[in-house]
Image 1 (spheres, rainbow, N blue to C red):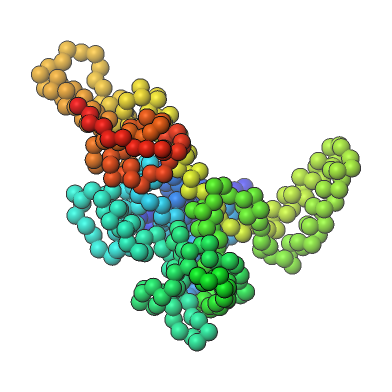
Image 2 (cartoon, helix red, strand yellow):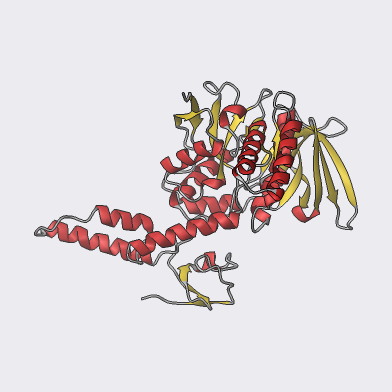
Length: 401
């Protein structure tokens, strides 16, 4: 009989929602449910769940593993849905994702802006800051000085306790990251190519593991075209004594030998059983399913399908609104005719608005694919066409009537 576990999750807008899952549910099941309830379908991989550690540190849930095994006191621990990977604003496709990014940016800024301010404009202003999307981890160096290690999409930062940047190392200069208990060691190279190892102590072993995961997962998400299977399938042992990992490894080896030398139902069953035993005694070490490019491509494909199903002219949200607001066949009065014309005018304006910032009119055609979807400011940030993923050889200004 399945046992449900209840979780209290704080959303980016401050609302608290109670969700219930089976004990075997993973963290991604919770993230996906919360994101779908907020209107995010293909860009849920940008988000994650955090919970407070025993020393007050912020810890990230590994969404690929069971949620009940990671969160202490599942019924009372307060989870928070937060942005885990801060991509640039022009890469966001779904409107609900922009809203959640906007709320997270305001929470990090520590103040509120007027509600009538454009969300995309605020995001672009925040993205120009040096600390956009940077996750900070409090550490102590060998001299017991309190410092911060920041990890963003491009580099690893060494900062003072007040946030001032001391050193910045781009990911190509980060040669190695290792962890031992509460200690983290970073092998960093300077501009002359000379490598030097830095050691830092964190508040707890879980905090050290969180920093180790943050560097590895952020590098894989932003800097790789696809997640390597060696990284995605790497596992760590949970209870090495109780679950007898050596016996599990022996079973897996024997199953592989049997598979190579015999073909039969017994071999297949033994292999499946050994894989099941191994999955019970271990869990995934890293929480990264796909890269930023793969998430963006999936969101673009969904948008393309929505556009095609709506006739190829309207944006998904506008098409849905036009479909639901379409009245039944009946004689139209003066007011209804005015409303219909206003709706058509709004649709025409939406068609000619930049698909990236949703603020400026479309004014650039991409060469050679001839796609028109962005304004002049957004097109300057594009390296390839977001629709066909083709390389951009040139950009031509167009004047729409």
